[in-house]
Amino acid sequence: MGRHKPGDRLPSEADLGAKYEVSRLTIQRVLKELQIEDLIERRAGSGTYVRRRAEVTGHLFGLLIPGLGETEIFEPMCQGMGKAGRVGGHALLWGDTAYGSAGREHQARQLCADYIDRKVSGVFFAPIEFIPNKDEVNMSIAESLSSAAIPIVLLDRCVQTYPERSRFDLVGIDNRRIGCRITNHMLSQGATNPIFFDRPHSAPTVAARTRGFRDAFPKGEVVHGDPSDRGFIRDVMDKHRPDGFVCANDETAAKLMQSLEEIGYRIPDAVKITGIDDVRYANLLTVPLTTMRQPCMELGEMAIQLMLSRIAQPDIPARDLLLDCKLIVRQSCGEKR
Image 1: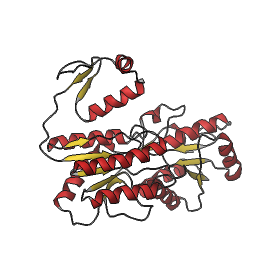
Image 2: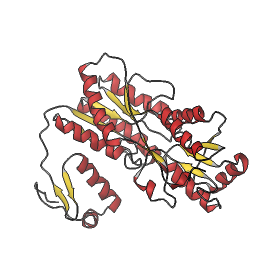
Image 3: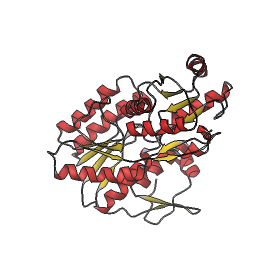
Image 4: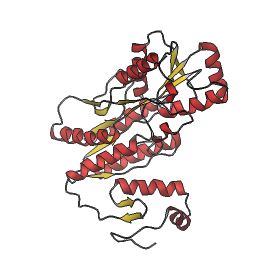
């Protein structure tokens, strides 16, 4: 295959795909992994180049993030961890588990076993969502790492259903408060009958956002379902007559927006929509999305600090390190009447 020395320019994504007979999406994912591990750098208008890897003088940590590449918030979070880790000479082991529901579970268990065999100093774990037995799987992985005396920092979500709390440290946002804030914004824009919409088997963060929605609008309905199912969405509109949807996240909001438009509802005139996360495409939707922006890079940096603190003080109680979000106002929620 040949080797590339530090400073060498790598072939284009198209050339790499043709050479190794894999899709361009696979090449992009591999390059993204190498970039987070600080092995390559991308220069705008020039290309991708090999970097000299810094010597690891500190801890070796594992990343266990099922769905990485599918959930956009984790890429900048990993970049934040990589940036903070390099300052102390620490390194991150990458594990890509974005292979569908069954594949994620199998890959996550394999990766957990691999980190235990390699005796890593700690693991950053984002628990699996969108599978029926997610709670059992997530707790099993966490307990396996704990039994091997490997510290865990949970990313974004807990391994137990809200409002229960596990015995592991967590870095994320205050989801209940965020749910309340985004709902209050929708109400301030004139909505009188908003509902909360999420997908079945979502992460515990969604349950907390639901609680925040009800803090702001106690009589509000909560609906679980597939936002891409136009027949289901039509039934929801006929039954509940909502004039707004507070969505669990931006991905749900984007799919719901498309379904509503296809069955004849104009946004925001007939129905208002909000999301949470502020993913890259949120401003590129047919109607730009009002949402809450997560400080993903900062969450990654704080995760490293939380892990180092746990290693230094293994017996202190579990902690939640929660950062604030910023309300991003766009057209999907309309103007105040």
